[in-house]
Length: 281
Image 1 (tube, rainbow, N blue to C red):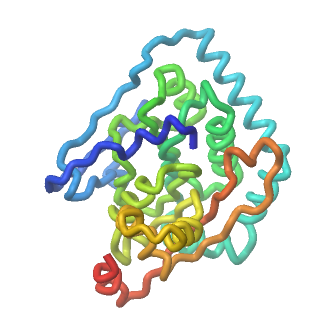
Image 2: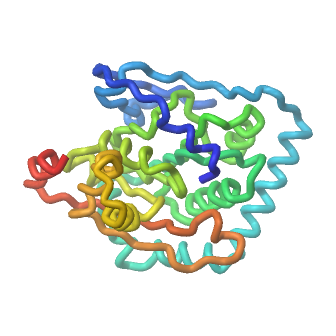
C-alpha cells in the first residue's frame, strides 16, 4: 500500500506473554466471536489513536467525495470486472466457500491501507474492498488499520461502513473465524507476522490473503541467496509448500500502481502437517 504504511511492524518485542484483546467497535457491541488474539511473543499492546486530530465537516466532505468518485471509477474499470469475475470463477469460489465452511460471513481485515486522503492508490485499494463487500453477501465486517490514519480518514472510513482498529496488531491477528486479510503492497514483515500468528493447521485453513505474491518473494530470496532475508521471510517461504496462489493479471491504467504484483493466497495444510510446519521453521 502507500509507502507510509511501512511503519507497520517496525517495533518488535522479544518478551513473551499471552494477551487477548477485545477491540472496541464504533456504534456496535463487541462480540466474543470477533475477539482478535495477539500471540504470546507480543507482550505489550500498542494502543493507537490518530496523530492528526485536525478535522472538520468541509475536510471530511471533500474526502468522502473523493472516495465516492474513486469507487465509481473503479467499479467501471476492466480491472474490477476481471477481478470480481475471478472471484466468481467456480474453481476460485469453491476455495472461498471452503474457508467459509459453516459460517455465513467472512470478516475482512485491511492492514497498511496508507493515507486515503493524500494518495490515489490507497483510495483504489479501499474502493476494491468496499466493492467486494457490496458484490458478495458472504463478506462481513471490514476492519482497517494503518498507524498514519488521520481523524478525518477515520471518520470517513466509519461512514463507508468500516471500523478502524484501536490497537496496532502489527499483523498478528489470530483468526478465530474465517478471515480475509486484504494487504496489497504491505511489507514482507507484516505477511510473516500474520502467518506466524496463524501457524497451525486449523488457523491456516481459516485465512485467505490478498496481497503481494509469495512466489515472487521466494524467487527473490533464491536469487539474492541472503540468509538474513530468508529468516525474515521464513513463514512466507515455509507456507509455500501447501499454499495455492492465483495472480491478478488484468489491470487498467489507474489500477496498476495500486495492485500490480498482487495475488490471492489459499492455504491447505494436511492433517499431519503440523510437525512438518514447525520443523520447517
